[in-house]
Length: 586
Image 1 (cartoon, one colour):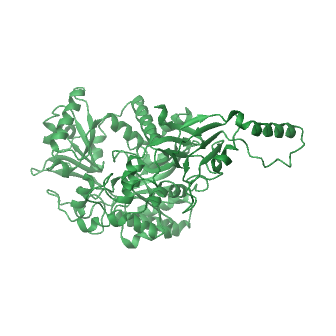
Image 2: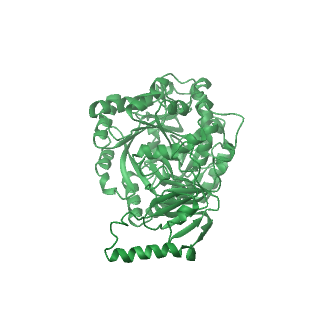
Image 3: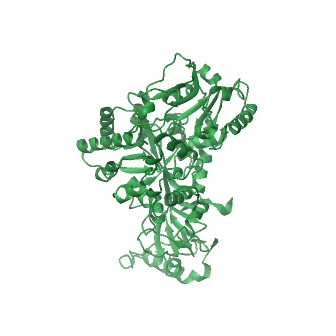
């Protein structure tokens, strides 16, 4: 891609503009030339522009941008006429342009901090986990916490136990998150610091696993993880800032122009995270459009305060207008997702109610009251709902809000929707709710092996039923859940939405009946994303008058084999007409 000035080729255009300005200053042509468009700040030429404005519309060649908005879209000749001698011209050299992508479920501060911690590749066996943990312990200060992940029981090869971590970390407290980040594996030192003994019972909404001797095994689920996490010293401001900037840069490099922080405070607390984002915005360091979801749980005073004080963090591209409500856990071998039918698998050493049907975190009436209140306040509610019982509870709460308040512009959304009953799918359209799916997990992965062991192969046929969701007319958007998943690259998700296989293809697949077309997959990130946010008149497509949030790609996704989509590279990311990522400058 080359940048040039049109120079002498535009002398005629410059002369006309000059004449118009002179005459206008004399007051002689005000009426006759009042509809003349301004010259473009930037034009992109010689590209393949997929506008997403129509089903069969051929690609355009060029785009003119002025003051952060798209001035015109068309062929090279027409768009070159929008320039003057000061216009920046970017020759795309045949590269492809799409609207910017929106990721509806990320945890950027957590992702950046995790990048700095003890990293264990998903799918690692016990020997590899111990090897990597030992290396991390050797680098740590004596007695310092060693934090990291990710592990899963099926890959470990045996039931995780504190003693397996004690062997390589006898003196440093250790906490390793699993592949879902809903469970943790800790060593004896960590349990001792948290004072978790055989006499300590599982907290409401959580599980402390016990071994054959009745002692805590070192595996904790859901709210029980917090019993240990609360003893981990918070990272200093400089470290958190560095983590966030790293994550923001990573997302820009993948063409993500807007995102939703799905649970603000997940890493270092709600106020600290909101203050950091606001500070970066005030310093001009933030480029993305960002929605924050503030976590809420029953009778949590801190959460209520954060919701009430949210307006002080509003900035031009920051909007804390969302509340996150965790309804259940995950349908893995931890059995914490709330299911309408019992799990298929049996958890050795557990006889609690949660092991049969999972955990529904909020009583229905309290949930109904909360969602009705938030809806009335103009807040969008994002439900973590993986199991079909949790999905139904979330939709019931939205229905209660609609009954009380009438229809509103808030599109409350069901995040994950791993399992959804057929009769509940169409309800989302009726209630103007949104399904947010997690396509980064759609291929064969260790976490899906764990889910299959928990629910059985028959239910796996309808895992993440995206095809049914779209055919029902419901709005569907994508969320990576990064850094629960290893990569925030949306082209991994686009490919797996279409193939339901591993990137590049695999002999096995996951929920193949839920696969959708390539165009549908791309529109989830663009057109549907804009509609969910209520700004479809500004974003999601490429047309005159729309905001210039664009992504330039090294290959045309509509022209390459589907199983090559994950290799797509972003050449440039443009937000508000500003080039905020340029691979050629790396």
